[in-house]
Length: 510
Image 1: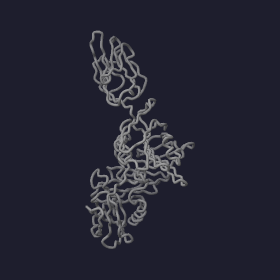
Image 2: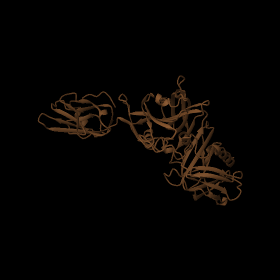
Image 3: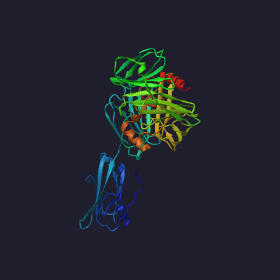
Image 4: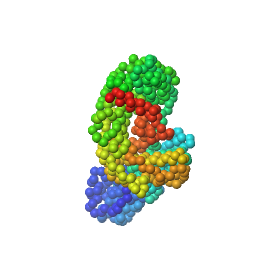
């Protein structure tokens, strides 16, 4: 943004005004800095290209207001944009020769002294909690922070000595004095920022589900946002629903050729007997080869959507585990799908992938992680391979006070870099005295994701700035629920049901 700029004189101006990407000028005066559509902040140079033999005067205005007048070289001024409101400005340079003839050039720029703006949704912060947004530079130094208030807007302006084009944005969520959660994302540009869209299922009712006869097999049953199993030991279950008239997805588990049924328009609060003979639709089969010898386990988790972009009404379709050198997957034909995948390498690095355009796409990740021996807040990270985003995690737990803290930092992979966890201002850390944020324990690279929604990290950030950190994952993917729900627990019954699904799936394929 800032740099050494000199006045261009002589014949150079003919080349400058002939460039196709320069704003239109008349050949006597043109802008060297700033460039057309450039974002500017703090004090920024405005310099002009003027012929050496020009002996008139030059005025420079911003939206009609004078910011400089020149009668001789150098035709350059330091424009203090901090005295101007953020917004779009048209800079016009008017050269007036001794005969009074005027010639002009202009560029349009955007003044962006505000680092971030946004709004806080209603009920975003729980009644007993507090939340802050923290801005820091690449070295972890705090630039600005602000407490968030439900249903209010926020505007954060950086200090005058911060001249960087990007920053690290951290959202901090507290339940004083014992709970601390923070989510950081790196290389964020100035502009609007949507807060983490934590997906908490809004249950509006429940359905009591039972089998019409004593089941001989195990059946996986899900509604919009909840699931459980029907079997001989558990012939009746109650499932929460996120829609008034929910649907029920039922599938066999444990057979070589499973079948399913999708039962529509079940009223919340009702009782429903599943006719087991109606579970007759054949599931499609896919097997995913696993060629990486270091993979010691693998899992694919599927969700189905009855309508595009109708995120509240999604149906867990099941978990599928590695057997031998492949993962075998059964899936119904009538759903839109989202899948998450995870597998564990011999270095205990956990990875997930998300892609709304594909059912699944196993990738091999090669990652090396080094932790500073002096400060666990500093990580030397080298990543390469097919994955594009790293998520580094830190954790703190003190049993004596039942205090816990977690911190996740997201950034672009594919390069070697030094990652520094941002500092926490004393005004925030004092609210959680049982937690020493400098004593957080580094726990490794807990996730590396594909973009899925974008072709580059820059495009990913654009999406996140509009939808929030968890925006593309609010469909109910397990890792996201673990990290972003207020309770820190997953929705549904993942904890108690996953082992059972694993056992039944292994029955099917062994």
